Length: 192
Image 1 (cartoon, rainbow, N blue to C red):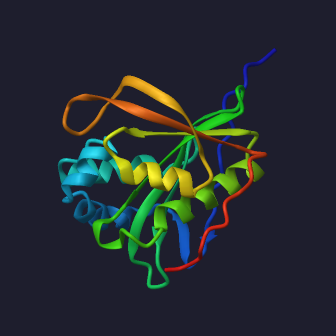
Image 2: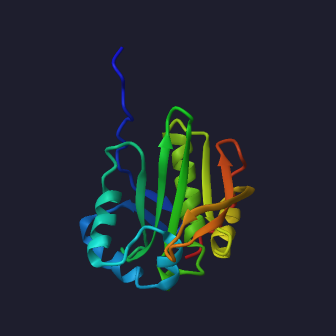
């Protein structure tokens, strides 16, 4: 019997309230580099974007969905301005689960973008992929991510001690949240 690897995922655009989630493009590098000038984003994102070349590498990884292990979007407004990012990653088709991560550009915070985009990606993932559980982890100190998780319909499950090294080089305790395919979907505002 021949071993079969993960199936590629075909990039798709999603609507999330007043926002659009589109696949990454090479021309997103400058907006990513600008967003990562924010110390909070650098601290809590953990993707190692310290130089413009790092931003280029990040965009390169996110625009290629062929591995079948992730689906990643840029969150944009109606003018096409980059507001944030959301990625369904660590997709495991054997266990039928995945993880989700997101960030919001500093000038776009406080508008509910991360929760709305996260909910849209969860709905897509549960419908398009053979997954029934999506996990979300964030550093205990990153309270804003906890608010996003709750608003996006995730249930708090526990604390992971010294589980992830963030942008400060320190392994932080994280809070673990999960959303199951049959959990009630949140009623999110479509405000912009």
